[in-house]
Image (cartoon, rainbow, N blue to C red; front, side, top):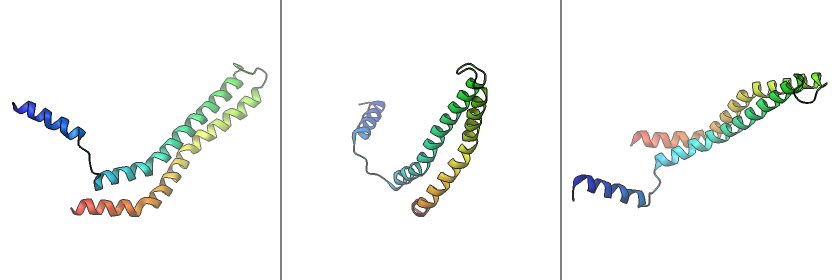
Amino acid sequence: MKQYEKNYVEKVVNQYKPKEPTKLDELKALDKKVNQPALIFACIFGVLGSLVLGTGMCIAMKVILENLFYIGIVVGIVGIIMVCIDYPIYKKILKARRSKYSERVVELSNELLNN
């Protein structure tokens, strides 16, 4: 058997062999657990804020719901506020989650760096 064939066979075997989770895998999962909820919230809230802003613009420009100019301005301002506070809320959620999981992350990181 040629060397490239052996390499291919080893690669296939490694794909099907059950893996035991390592400390690095645990650290990656913990980091994802910290960051993902804040990111999901920020994306959803930002998109909703953009949609509210766009709806307000459409009302104010009389594309939809004619004769409601002032309501369109109010809806647009609400959308602008939502978009503006999205990042500070994201940072606050991220800070809270980091403080919650920081002890375990530092512990795992020190174990990995010392090995």
